[in-house]
Each structure stands twice: as structure tokens, then as C-alpha cells.
Length: 499
Image 1 (cartoon, rainbow, N blue to C red):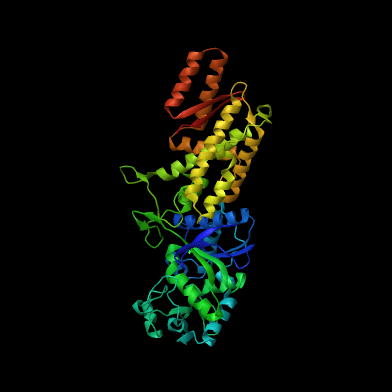
Image 2: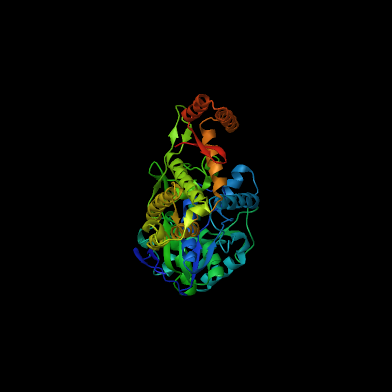
């Protein structure tokens, strides 16, 4: 393979070269489960899902680890706000997160470790840092000493002398007096009497934010990862601190490549739970086909910001999401094209010497080449549009009077759809199922009743059978005015919502 990825550590696009050329060990920071996954999370995990799919589709074994942070101060805060037991709250949102990832078409990771089941690994790593002089105990807390690690700041390109109190972690300023340097960060936090926590060698408490990922990733992938991924907001402090504590403990490079995806933005601000400007994936699943959300996440290069727009009525209520609606139309076009190809009558497909169009014959290769180049999904989607246009032309040609399609061209097109599913996770659903969902959702959005439409179609069929073509045309025109397009075929009349 010749995959090139932008490495945040070096600030360059470079060949992705795992230690074992045939086996990539990848760790991606998963969610902190105190609420439902928002669209920023959706984008992040779609990006790394495509990366894993691409590597596997092209012959590389991948061990993909994506954690769930089910122990964190944000969970504790939300539990207090809602009167919920923290462990129960985290479990509920972890299950919801998993459901949402499946609906977006993301593959399960090979390992999905949870902080709550890795406390012994965290204890061992913290003790190793204390024993090595890289961490110190202070009034029940344990802190990492950033001054003990000479490379601190190498990922985010920050100067240690300019860092302020609390900049390197989720930490209340009341802990300031316990720290030797303002940028030191907590590996273990003391719990107050009766508060959520676990017994440890340093007293009752809970792990710090950063040590969790280092312990889990090294437990399942070893001391050196081939690639560590996450959102751009994790470069500092989270990933910077992961590097410091991991490399201080082992003396080895923590990750060969660091990959970060850009934000989903609202009014040029990062979408986040803390800012309160977010939509959850679940907010949209009833309004937009989940695969269209996935598709939209691929329309902009993964390192660039992805801006989200919506329309409002006079009362300020959200009435639509134009970008998602356009993505849904494009997804429908994928499935309609695939359906046409699969529905070609066998007698219209023949063996001949007519070569397939380049857009069909070369699609699987150009898709791979696009993703090889720093996972360039927008270029891949542009190539997909050319491929779909050519496949429809092939189907048109086959269905003309005395028309035929070359078997080799049909087979290339089938290979292209298989590559699309394998590499991008698009086009994997049964076409009739997803098109029916999109149709019915579109009808509902226009205030149309599917049952009433079916009744009008039945009346039109009766009129046509009675040769009352004026009445049949009247019904057709009436439905067309409502945005309903009729599809007459040998097996009857279907319908769809026109664009």
C-alpha cells in the first residue's frame, strides 16, 4: 500500500508505515459518555471508520481500539445535576453511543475498552511514573511533572514556560497549591468523603483524564502505536499529555503517526456540548437518513472545518438542514443507480468486445488512490459522481430498443459498488429498503399521506384500465403538483418524491 497521511507530530504528509507492514495498530479516543453523541463525534468516528475500512480493503490487518471514557469529572457533574448514579448514567449513554455508531454505518472496533474495567492497568502505570521520578503524590492526588519530560510540547508546539494554571487538564484551581508547576497534570484525583471513587495505593479517588487512554492503549496495542487519532481539540492538552506520560514511562516513542480531524462548526464556532450549540445524531435520525449524515461528513476534507447550516421558520424553529437533505438526495442516487444495475434483464447483458467507460472500469482504483492521498474523501465522492453517471448511461444503453450492455462493463460496475461499500461504507443497505425510507420521510416532510397517495394511484390505474386517460392524467398532474413523481412499470406504478 502507498497510503500517505498528515502527521500532526511532524506537520507533514508522509507515508503511513506501521512497524509491521502488514498490521496496523490504531487507537482512537472515544467519547466521554455523559450525553448523547453529537455531530462532532459522528464526524470523528466516521473519519476513522473510513481509515480502517480503507486499510483493510487493501490487504492490511488492522487492530482498531476505540475506548469509552466512563469515568470522568463531566460524568460526575452531569450525574449530580440529574440526580443519577454516575455509573448508571455512564452505562446508559455508552449503550446509546454504540447504537448511534451502528446507525451511522460504523464498524465496531476490535477492542472497546472502558476506563472502569482498566483501573489496575492505570494503577500500574501511575506507580511506574512515580517510581521513575516523573510523578509525585500531593495530599492524595498524584501529578505528572512536566519538567521531568524534556520533550513536553512537541505535538502541540507549545512552550512550557508560557503555560498557565489548568491549561493541561480538566482541573479545578483549588488544586493549584498541590502542584509543583502550573502545567503539571493529575494522574490520580483524590475523592472527597462519600464521593464517587475507587480505592488505590494513594487513597480513594479516580483517575485523571489523560492517564486513562495511555493505560488502555498500551494494554491492548503495546508501548508504541502505529497511529493515534482523535479530534483536533485533543491535540492539547490530552494527546500532548498522553505522549509525556507514556514516553516517560517506557522510554519509547508512543505513536508513529498522530491524526486529527477538524471540527463541525456552527456560526464558525466548534460544535460542542460545553458550548451548548450542538445537535445530537439522534436529533437528526428521524429527519435524515443516517447514511446521508455519514455521506455529508465526507464532503469536506477531514482536516478542514465542516460548517453546518439549517433553516428556521418565523418562530425560530428549525425547519430543515439543506446540506443533509442534499446528501440524502445523493445517497438516494447511489441506491437508485445500484438498483438499476441489479435490475438489468439477463438478455440485455451480452459478451462483446466493447470496453467499459473509464469512469466505470477505473472507479475502484481511483477510489483507492483518492483515499491513499491523506484520506481525501471529497475527491473520492467526485469520482463516485462520475461513476454513477456512467453506470446510468450504461443502463440507458441496455434498455433502449435492441440495446445491450457489455458483460465486462456490468462486472466492472458491480466491482465499483463493492469497493464503495468496503472503502466508504456507502451503499451497503438493501436498495429497496433505504429508498422506501427516504421516500416516506420525504412525503412526511411535505405533509403528504402515503396511504392517500397509494389510493390515488389505484384510482389512476382503474381510470387507465377503463381508457379514461383524461382522469388518469388529472390524477398524475395533481400528484406532480404535490411533489409526487409516478413511476410506471411492467409490474405496476410506484412513486417517489421529486427533488
